[in-house]
Amino acid sequence: MLDAKPAAFQEPRSLIGSWRRFGSAGPVYEIVGVTEPKAADHPQMRIRVLETGEELDYPLTDLLEDPAEG
Image (tube, rainbow, N blue to C red; front, side, top):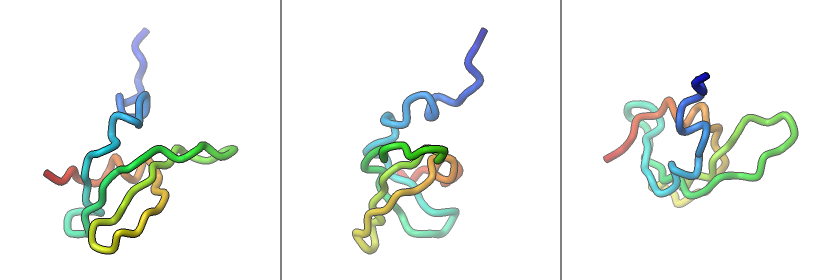
């Protein structure tokens, strides 16, 4: 039987070092790490916003919907 989960859900660490943008015109951010899972939380990634240098936790499901930045 095949696993129906996307590859990114299987290995979120493979996203580290890549760049994405919040929506089609939002700020660019770099994926810098995986956060420690908390009870009943959805997987989250640590990101750094290019414009501000701010680091924050961002839901993996939202991240996967954001366009990749080349």
